[in-house]
Image 1: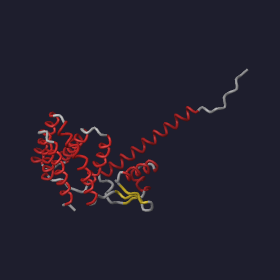
Image 2 (image 1 turned 180 degrees about the vertical axis):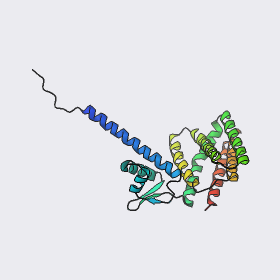
Image 3 (image 1 turned 45 degrees about the vertical axis):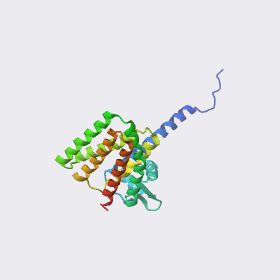
Image 4 (image 1 turned 90 degrees about the vertical axis):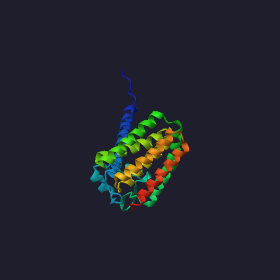
Length: 238
């Protein structure tokens, strides 16, 4: 006599399929988010420009739902504004945006500079100092080329990122990542000259020398001065 088959559906297969679909959606959302940021920083999506979601979806070849989800995240990060009737407006930094960005960076990174000066490794200070001096020499001898500009941006990220990482605070690192996006956005409409780059790198060296001498308050003040001067340099271009 055959047993009567259980009428309950096999939920394991459905669960696996739902999990796979969920993972795929997350991957698509992340890919859309990264692609939009890349296009913004490459200047393919101009600051201040308007575009409908359908136009953006077609232009970037991104499906509607992942695009919509990515745009919501980017709006929460203040990178763009979603207008329900007119479409997407990409953030164009104004004076207030620039001032707020540097003020916020000063609050976070002054604490990082103090901590770095107290607990950073001498070998790391020496390495960063050498990298700055070497790059200044390149800028003075060759000017600003695309390759040198890439080196400048990489060292900028490394220097500030290393100080922030020394705090070992996840919340600070998440906030600093967003501020890094704002700085890249601000720099899109500004041109680098050998003089400006050299001055900025020398300001980094002032911070490093305070760290080498284990003077936390001097390092924090040098960091504050660096951001104040960077803010003035940007504001002069308006």
